[in-house]
Length: 178
Image (tube, rainbow, N blue to C red; front, side):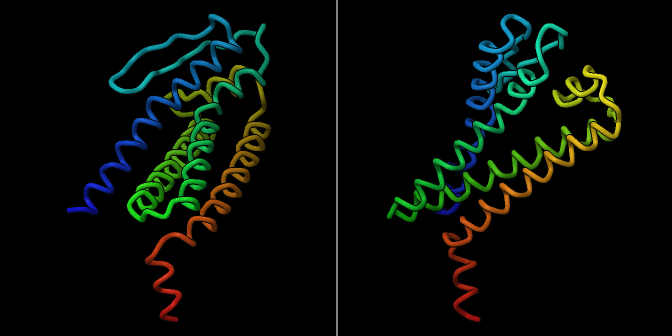
């Protein structure tokens, strides 16, 4: 029962941070960089920020708005990792570990979804697709941008995974048995 409550608490915290705080941060960045060129819809517990591209706003501003939820997730992951190293209470460590893993999953899902929408010219529209199609990049240039994004994603996830392995007791127990 204690494990179920622990995992439930981590899922609730991560859901709130992913669907509310990340989007709130995206709204703040959109407000600062795009002016009034966006719309905000409140859907359940999540804020949906959508925008139409305009030639008067640079692609860098749009990219910063697009990646701002991912940056916020990375900030939350790093704060949780800092908490894991400093906490002595195993309950909070376990909640933080599950929280980090769910946020990593969100980052993977968000980046892969954006990449797939651009690669396959999907019917569903993501922010990545909107920006890259409005800038008239060639298909090869789009693939290069996606490839570089994927390299950065893999590098970050690899580092976090190496850091978090030290704190997962099942992995440490398995290493001791060898």
